[in-house]
Length: 449
Image (cartoon, rainbow, N blue to C red; front, side, top):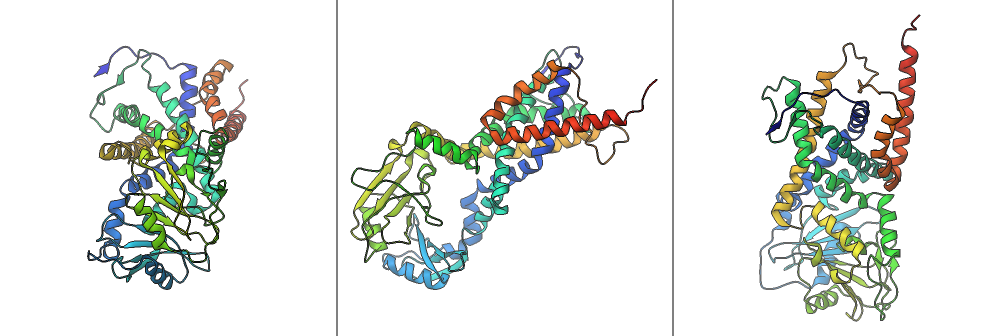
């Protein structure tokens, strides 16, 4: 279906928004394409993990089980360090995975047959999926690059908002169900493909950008702090237990809900802590497998046992005294505040887990859509580029004059800049750069007499 009418001339506001849509695309698309590619791979985390490490994961099932503490001893020997956590699998034909922290600061994952305590293999911690995760968050390149994720997410929202403004019909012909031409050599095809992709998957990309913000180094930390301080986050520690403490480096429990990250409880000083004792408590409390048992490096901290879930509402974490096996806290979804629930739900949907296969397909469509938008945008720029374009210039749409035009653009981007300060700072830098470019362009024009 196509809305057909005579084309209207482009207004100054339209050209101004188009200019900033162009700049937003130039700024974020290379990073957004990387995030989309790694995000699409992460949607298939379980399948990739099984395919790569099948020989290490698969073990012969049997009725017996070796003592759990023997798993730790075997893993510590093979990994040449101290066992930090254990992933207890769902089925008996799968190896347990033990993270081992080595004296040099590196970490290893050791696969151990739960029936015989035999080591089946050793890999870098997290293996190939941990590398993909590091690329997705850009944390693999250091904290500075992780901050860049926040800027990219903010500009992605600007890209979406300006794209909707540009797509809006205003009496012009716009594609709604299919491109107006099948000739891929013509500009309308690429324009319509770009618009249609943005129309149908832009909402998914916007959702991914917004729900990805809590992972960022600056805004995410601020968001979680506000949620906790307003009582909308994790529940208070039980009266019988000590208050929550902030985990030290490498002490943060693995596998817990994001709301409970970095939160640990003090326990009784343990002279003889035991994984078997803690697992017996977890089984007695009917904690469903798979779950992760986090082993504290100091004897005065409780062991944290977290259920590995796909749906946010199935989250559950036990805090167990390593000496006595007593449950110090049993934290469930129902105890989370409203902010924490929204946060956890957004993460589960972002990762394609909350609503099963349909959820994963929709998120995958968003990731594919990013690449279609990037490629079609690049083709449109190439076809529209000014003749004789110099390498030092981008060929951006011309900036129309007038305060009213600038107000139209700033009306879109300023609210987002207030919500996301790093995006605002990058916007100021972009405005300054745009002003410099226009001044230089004006100075380079030959004078008229």
